[in-house]
Each structure stands twice: as structure tokens, then as C-alpha cells.
Length: 434
Length: 145
Image (cartoon, rainbow over all chains, first blue to last red; front, side, top):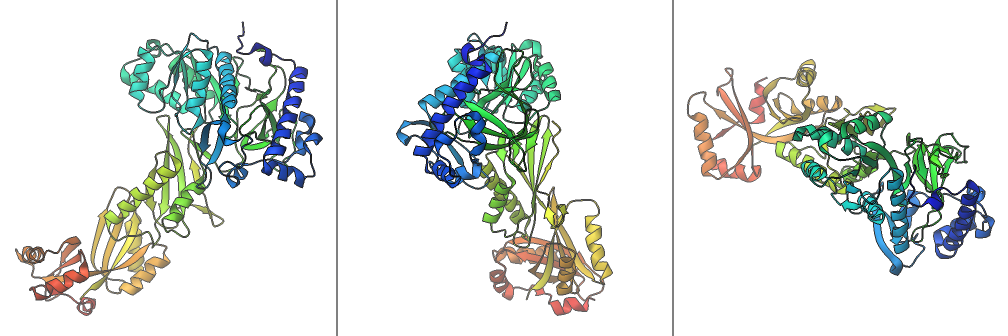
């Protein structure tokens, strides 16, 4: 028997859902047009008034919004509510020094918890569960997002945050955790670490894993399920839209249900940016229709996948996204953190390097992502002293780590040793097999 | 009196040193002294050669990161105690050594030589003027061939 957190919304008919979406879309557009100069300007450029968009079908008339637009209006230019009503601010790193800032009202936070609670129940969790959240707590939306939903559900939450695997496993065993929320690579790592502490999956009481913030494969799912003795679910979210719980798969595991009463998903062709039919891959575009603080109209996620509106066997009508197959930009996800190669370039430019040649090598060692930045030593960086070069390595490493927020290794290499194709250096070598 | 040393950045990988030294052989560059400071990933190759300017150009052309560095060369007799005496003199003048390397030879009047890179080298050079430390000039070096 399928359980729902919000049976009414989750099992609406397509017609009822469309009526609700149209109504919420219109009121969101009215609001951003009157309150956010950015949207008003963009719509005026296209000669559009809010009244010209009456239904979800008309969405395609509207202009897109990108991460760059969010940086251009940094920090509060896109807020549709006065700052006094903002309850929380999250931020994620961008391609340059500027972060993308997202403000949530109290109601937005409630909506977020609602969506997360739906995801937890969809995975089979209830108020009787003990939820161990090993996503980072902080500006990153993972920790607090999963936390809010588990609390709303009435489960017991362990705000474990990231790191300290020994303590994570001790808590998992001693506190009797039944639901685990973390990145899939960390789940695999935890599974591997069990035996290091003389434990097997029978010594722990986990039943459900909710994993996201980085791409993973079906094989990896199987692997995690076997090692931890759980059923694994794929959760999707992005800080600009909300954080985790924009979508997740149900027990049928046939795609991730997007909570369409709040988020309208579209797939557009990567070249023409025109909407494509169900089942065709393209870039995922999301419009929020129930958010107050920072409504986003046609946000280009840069994630590539497809979508189906067919009703699912679980009884939910909400559209399903396929597993994501990649990115339409050069963003990397390393240990759940977004990394743009240009961030590393900016560090090198700041340290006086005029035309830095570097390469990012990403690998997965013992199920944990590693990042090595190889930097060609030019005359301006070169020192005749070993200490000078070692200081350079550690200085660059510290700067890169502080900009990206994740650890890395820096390796100095000879000029021209980084492979170039047609004069352009290949910036990223991703050796991870997922 | 300083002499010019070539410093080159070299990655720690098999065959690389042989390749770089090969470049000099092809161009008829004679090496008087050589040292490598190594770490796990890279090394700094330091060379005293017959023609520093030309060597710099050869290595630059081959894409290496190269620097010309001023060092001093001290002539020694090849017998017990001579290096200890020089180091003692430096110590007495409060001069620190950044790095050094030594070699012996049969062909010159002085049969041993030490290359020093000194801390605050200009100042250090002034200090050792009064010591009985015999510096080798680049002219003498070039006579070595």
C-alpha cells in the first residue's frame, strides 16, 4: 500500500494539477513583474505583459534566467519580497568570486520541508524513523534541507553533517539510524568502511537511503543497496530553486517525480532552446510557482535529462525526470560541491600568473572523489629554492581550497606538459567511473 | 665575484633528466658541475656550464622553465679539512647557506670546487672579502673548457 505525505496534492489528476499550475504561474508572474525590475525589463524587451501568459503552455513565450543573471543582480536584486520577510539565506559558489544568493521566507522554508517530507514518505519513511543527515550543514542546502523535511515528518533527526566516518558509523549503530541522507559516493564509502570497524550490514538498522547532490549510476545504486542493506532513492535539487526535494524517485524507481504544484519542469533543445517532447533529452528548465522570496522563471539548470508526464504506477501524477546524463556547461560536481574550472583560473590570476595553464584531474579513490590541480610552472612562478616551490604549492592549494570549499592537491608540472588540443588546454580530466 | 648558474624545473618522471642533459650534449655544452634538489613530484636541476647564456637559450627553446641564478664558486684543495675550514669561516661571519654542492677535478690548479648559494648573497660577499676563501671567477671557469 503506497503512502503519501500529502495524498491530495500527490494524487491530483493531471487536469486538476494543470488548473493549479496555471493559477500559481499567473500569480507568480504578476508578482515578479510588479516587484522585480529584472523580470519586468526582460518581459518588456519581448513586449510581454503578465496577462499574456495564461497557462503552462505559454511558458515558452517567456525569457530564460541563468546563473549569470543571478550574479549580475548579486546579492538581493532578484528578491520578490522585502528583506524583512526573508528568514534564511543560502548561497552557492559561482564561476567567479560571486556567489549565487537565495533568500527564503518563512513560508518558503515550510514549502521546502513539505517537499522533503513528501520525498521521505515516498521512500517509505515515517515519523517512527531515525534519520541521519550526513549532508553538510551550512550555506550548502543539503543538510538543512533534508533536516527540515525529517523534522516536519516527525522523525528523529541526527544532524550528523559531513566527515568523521568512525563517528558516523558509531552513531548509525548505537542510535539505531533507519534512514540515511548523504551523497551517493559517501554512502558507498560508509558501506566500505563498515568492515574496517568489524561490522557488517546486519549490525546496523538502516532501511532507506536518500542520496543526491551528485550524479550516480544504476550500478552504484545496486552496490550501495547491497553494502548497506537498504533501498536507495535518488533525490534532486539545486540551491537556486530550493535545495534537495525538487524531485525524487518513488519505489517504482522509474524516474524522479518533480513536485509540479511548486516547480514546472521543461526540457529544451540545447541548441535552439525550444521545448522538446516527452522522452527527448535536453536541458532541464525549471519555473517555481509557489515560492515567495526568490521566484525563478524558466531557470536554466544546465543539467541534461528528459522528462515524462505519464502517470506512475505509484499513483502520483507528478512528472518524472530521467536520471541526469550530464551538464551543458563545464561545471563539475566533486564530493557534492559545484566546481567551475574558471574558479581555479581566478586563483592563479590573483597570484600574478598572467596566462595560467592548469588541469583539473578528478578521480574516485576508495569511493571518495579526489581532485588534483596540475599547474605549469612558468618563469614568474619558478623559484630556484625547493622551499620556494613548496611554499607556492601550499599557497595555491590553500587559496583553491578556500575558494572552492573542498580539499585538493596541487602538483607543479613542466610547461607544455598539459595536453592541448588545437592550442586549447584540456581543463578537466574526469577519471571517475560512475 | 659571482658566477652564473642555470636552474631548471624538472618533473620527476623516468627519462626526463637524460632527455634534458641530452639537449646540452647535442649543442656541445660542457657541464662543470651539477646538482638536483628533489621532492616527490619535481626537482630543480642546477648546472654550472661552459656557456650559461647559450644553455639558457637551448633549454628555453625546448620549453623548459629556466632561470639564471648568481652563485659563488670556491676553490679548495682536495684534502681533508679544507671544506671544514671554509664552512667554519662562513659560520664565523654569520653567513647562512641556502644550498651548496661540491665536486673534484684533476685538471685545474685547484682540484676541488664548491658552489654556494648564500643567504643574502650580496651582503655575504662583502663579509667574506677579508677571509681566506678563494673565489673562482667565470673567466677561470671558462678556461676549464
